Length: 81
Length: 148
Image 1 (cartoon, helix red, strand yellow):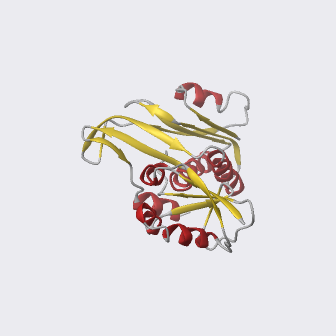
Image 2 (image 1 turned 60 degrees about the horizontal axis):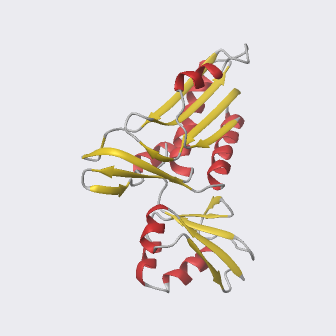
């Protein structure tokens, strides 16, 4: 299954990319994170304790189930307002 | 409910007046305006850039306002948040809440800001005397959101 992954703010800068498409078997959102962590290098930032994530533009937790074609986003804690 | 995410500046006074202009049943308006400060975390700030997640931002704000409307008897809620480059002294965010009586408006405005700070996908990058830096999320903001 294909999943589109997006990065924002400091994550986008440190990874040097806005996003990418991953192909693999992902049951929950954390499976995507684990696949990215396995790439090593700057992806280690996805191990940060306060990481936030979203599925299809809604905040969720890492145990969120995924389906083909979902959009996933990883980002540091939000700082608006 | 009005949700606006825009680069353009806004006039807080005009926004407050618009909260009750069309409804004589409004007895209370509470408004919060957030501004860019020229100093933060020990460094002078010459300006900032506000990044956001287009699409999700509007959805997240609408969800927060809907929750406020379910918790309190509100007559009007307006949320306006700026993005892009901002200078010290400029307004960043406006949250206006109108109700018949003051307590609902006070509480709902506070609630919307606490949730916006911890759930709406905006990120501030400050230009300081030592170069640009991302603003870190604060535990005090997460604690404030947790009390609701």
